[in-house]
Length: 86
Length: 390
Image (cartoon, rainbow over all chains, first blue to last red; front, side, top):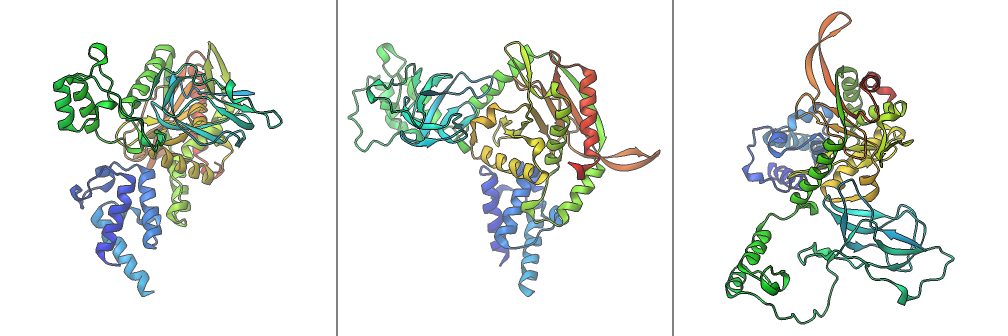
């Protein structure tokens, strides 16, 4: 899974939750929940969708690391690579 | 024979538009089955039937707007003979037919549309309609003799250019519905307000421990604990759980918690989680997830709108410290939870950094007093100290 695959997954799952958000206009280093107006349930649904789609474990303690788009891409790409090695 | 009528889905609804029948004559129906979809100011609502029997006749065609209480269909007992077709009354008192731009699902399919009648319209209106691609046949003229004028076309073109309705919501309608209900509440209900701050650290730690082992789809949110603690407390305080209608208060034996859910783009609804006090936290969380999903998709059920006996509004973790709710009639109370925050707090005589939360209550003075309200809020806070017992 490449970084581009991860970005595409985030973009598509985010579009399901917040269809009016223009992904390209988001600041990838800023708080995603603030920018996309995601409440606790939305964010949990985003993690659920990414976990199921990418097959990557996302422990609750790590959820904060997915708080920005860049953070989420780095985390998911790293975890997916590690999952492949095992 | 029983009439299946346009239900009242809240204090603010006087009519609804039948969008779709989900059952046909001859179908067996039982209590709780969804047999129709009705468009209201709150969006499309799936309507459940309260009787068991056989759907005999449909009295109202999709696209028709009818007042609350008007029969939509006839249901007969299984043993009963069907009504002769000729008896079927057709929509006794439709207010208006729905405009042609009603949701597409509503339009009955017509393989051969009838020829369009001649349309009376001013030359300027015709020119603008051609420019903007507005179909004159779909407009209702406001000019002399129903003639379509320039302003009618401008209005139609503006409406067409307006943003699409995500999830079937009409935000202007939604805002009017909220305004009507809240204005009525403030006019009729003598509210009083209480606020308390409680230690949320035990609940927060317990939640983190439990969630650490769970995949995302099985995790709990603090909002589920808030709803459960409130539902359990409400059992011991019946003066906050019920409906005030026709000058009298009727406490409810069941606790149906209305969960306030915001709608992207504006507005909110507070549909019910039925019998919330009897559900495990996992089941309550699943019910809340399902409600949020369906509310966002613009589809929820009539019983979920009409049944809440007490509303819980929780700001979640992006918000402010406290919220003071307005009671949704005919309910008599609303419990609010602010954003959980880290604050210095005194535990066993020493300062400690703790997660705390404010609990607020807005309640109806026709039914209860601040003294009982305070005990109710304290009971909710007390239950949050032992999350494992929720």
